[in-house]
Length: 135
Image 1 (cartoon, rainbow, N blue to C red):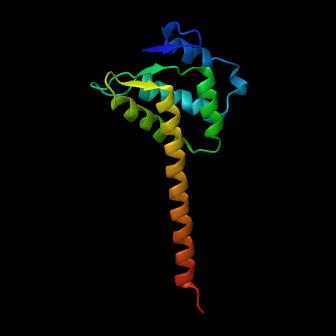
Image 2: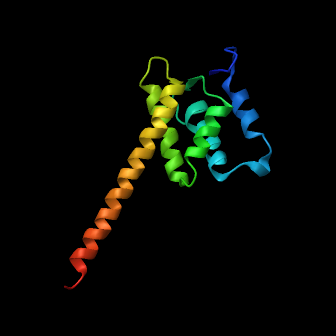
Image 3: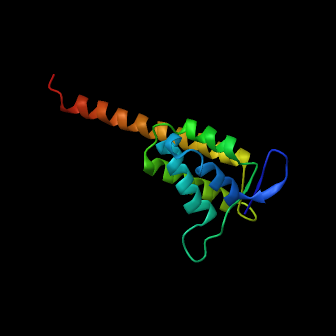
């Protein structure tokens, strides 16, 4: 698996990820820890005998930090689902490649999906309140 850094040189993505994860541990947020863990689990070393490793292109520290900021307040389950969505997006390409555009588009789609779910839940609560309140 390879990552292209800002200077367009190739280096193994696990080096980028490990450097990113080994930054001052005290400063790691809950989201950063989970994103790193799920990138490792679903993209770099996916579970299962037949699962492919994902190649990333133009995804480095800056892009991951951006996603950390965008996922503030996400549950662990939501972050896990996001990583699985990245994996699915990569598997939809020839060679299991996740590029920067797809990386961020997947985050946007995931956030929109979560917002829609929250909207449905709110509507269901309003409807339940209306149906159970005596007039």
